[in-house]
Length: 322
Image (cartoon, rainbow, N blue to C red; front, top):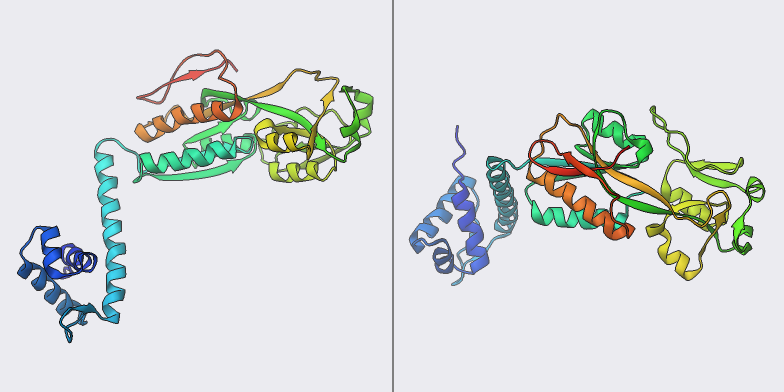
């Protein structure tokens, strides 16, 4: 049996409430006033409720009517969202985009990306996840993420890739750490007596710890914990420059220079990764393009020289040699 309540009735109800009268609602809906009045009467009969208090000169919603209007608005919003979704799908728009980024990816860039995406593709569901190193590749290979952002050591074989931008990594200590008082390069012998805080993943496809110079280590599985430990003077370690920029300027963290690394900036390249057997529509292609520009904005460096690289059916990209 078909439900006798119609979307037209619900739209008429909401229009009367928003416009303030049956006549104003009729003008908005481009109908005669009698049609709106009839729609309201039929809706009340079908629901078995009095939506309007007709005991006054100006009709007012009853308490039950207030509840029905609130639900009607939610229903109409969902119907409108369904129409936008299906209209986009007719044009090739994907219903869902899933993104998994390495913890090193700038949070400010990720937030801006989500804001811009929701404005550009309001009918597309965006799912975001954060992992460390090879955890990103695992999500992409399993299909739980259609696009990933990973460093070079975390990219699994067989995945396509597009160069984004380098992230500057800065060795730092807390302001009260003994190494904070050292001027100039710090010898390897000095570092051997100091705890190094290392980001170390726990996935099955574990990537070896990177840049370990101290035999004494605290190994943590997330960047937030590492950052907090460094602020509390528990050791030294690398952090993304975009993450510690303000703390370096305020003196809460101090930059150090391990002699093995010298004065040269340590940069970690980030790549957008995806499976080559997946078709990308306009939302995915837009996301790849914005990932690169936002990553450059936060990292302050352009992608290294790269060759043209084919994106999954319908897009173009750039790739660095591995």
